[in-house]
Length: 149
Image (tube, rainbow, N blue to C red; front, side):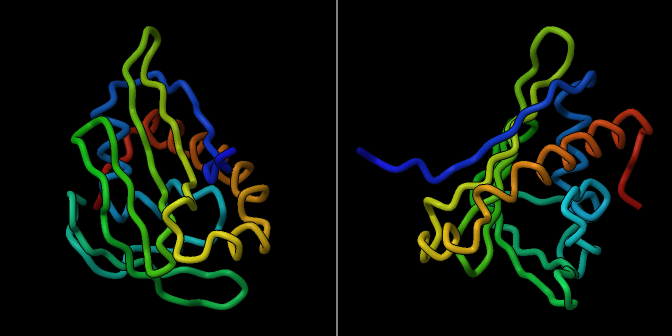
């Protein structure tokens, strides 16, 4: 039996996929939509992420730190995923359906350099609540017409 090393949450957002994707594609959008309270702002990188793009974020989890990531998966208006030195990925998928766009956020530690550590510290159980908050915030940003500055 293969152990699944992913957790996902989804939300139907009443907007076109391109409008929602634009927020996630922008490093500045990450701090605006973050439901965990750890992402503070874009540090370096382009205004729009694409496959292979490197970008940095100011973070805070008790103490401030910086995190560099690379976009590992990308399909315009449909899919974007990135990872940092630990190897695990944050993935957003966008599917237009009746009533709007189904947005799925996935924390995927199957690509982690050391998956047992991710499990030991409890991230698979902790992250879904924050991911739900992120998708809720993303919904609010789209409704407010948020654009990167």
